[in-house]
Length: 264
Image (cartoon, rainbow, N blue to C red; front, side):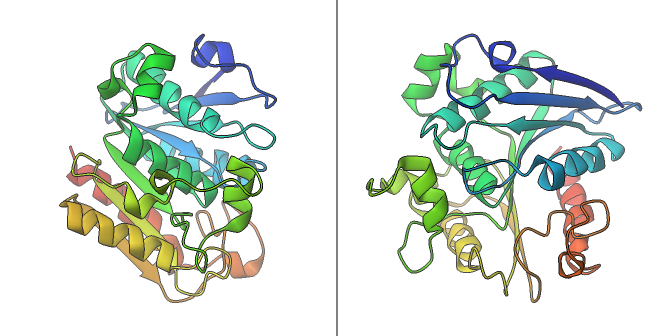
């Protein structure tokens, strides 16, 4: 598979310089492409990006399935909102400019929150004004949220993720509690988590699925009964501790590939 790397300027000259060295790595399959490009947003609580587990192995899996895949190592602490959102939007615009027919955004944990932000908020005037693009150029055609941080409800939220994203003590606007900002023009969405996730409670995924249902947005959701946080592909391709490898949970990936096929 071919690999290209873009720095901040290469992603978009309109992005403000932050304190994080961001990078977009694009992997192209060796075989004929299906038309999908998948932008992968690793987790890491907006403090880091876990690209070694939730980034490149996932990208290689999509690439092996004949999809273009791109890993965005986006701005994290000490950079704040909305830098990462603008970088994700600019990456989608770049992939579209390079000929991608359909673009899915795939995020894990805090990266799932970022994926949900671009799925919910692609129409924000700040994005179009900053990047100099039409809103439809940054709208993903599908969203894949993997054990995603969703809600700002005190008893269910990831305090670390929101604190790193906004700053300690900063009020969380309703748009960032993603179950409150879903609209009918959200893209079709695939969601999965485990009922025993002790870092990001499964209610986050359930709240988002309920919001999609109410807005009339097509979705597919899978809640696996067992498994810790940060399972990634849930097999040896993403290693981790033995509890993070489970053949039942690993079915999320082929299910997701089948779901993508239904959208084209």
